[in-house]
Image (cartoon, rainbow, N blue to C red; front, side, top):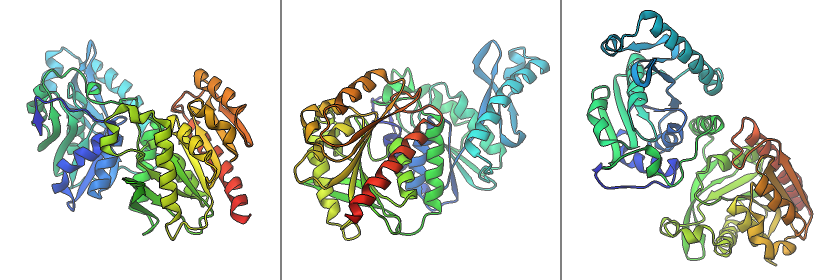
Length: 438
């Protein structure tokens, strides 16, 4: 734990992996990791995986003082749990009717989220267990405080609050409701949680659900289906996840976009859809941690394409993969790298899918791409849509442009990512099957 020094996290997944190291002593204990929707869930997902612990969300809504909603006079949780701080309520002059009105409003939102996230599943039983409450950071502390109180009310024997970054003046207040407060940094001059993340894009409901689904599949996964691997791409050793469904008919290699990694929630969502139709997948980090620190590398398409080609050569030497046709799935700048690599004369790639891609960054090589290419773009992502339309005219092989109506660049709208996954699954299933039997 550090106070005073500024620390930056790449994104919530990076923060979660770093936070997990501070919590390693909890591994093997009866712990339930509880992410605070929405932004706390990706952080919690990494912690749960590292601790080999179950992941759940803690559904909580703060009961704010009507004329000063940032001040919490209580909180509500699932199963009718309500915690009220009568001292604050009376000091604020909130009547019983006023409290009831606030509770009714927050209950409606709580119930909406319960339906959306739980989807009929019961919440994790906290009785007698350690509740590890995780968020992406603490500014005022009111929501984290409410979550700890609700976890205790649900029967947790011990409550641990863990966050990557916290405002220094909030620590003592949180220690009143948690048995332990764990954090990585408590920097001076704290203003907002987002200032300590390079990527602090809003977390969508779909991302929360994907994290929960991934954790459930991990808990019930067949042994050997997925394994962590070290990809040897030239002189670089890169971390990756290789998933091999039984009887796989092809394998898809993912190239993530700038500021992302093999832990990309969106790419993992698509990968799971491909696994479900019998396609193997490899998600790996295109850059080492040292290379990521130089932002120029993130946009060096030639360098990224060479790294992707090297990883593909390594992949095809793995015994379980030999003989399988290869596809590339690229997102944003990763799509440019995938197309550049696919243009190599000896490329084994039989199909390419680009999600919200920047094929214009590989414009010089597009006429040499002969693999069937699917370009998927959000209908509301107008600038990228124009770039993809122009790029399609340059591609040397068969191509198709699919527009997901009303979707923006990250496909965060309800159902948008599901459409991307279905389109990719259909494209790869047909094209890789043809390559497999040719």
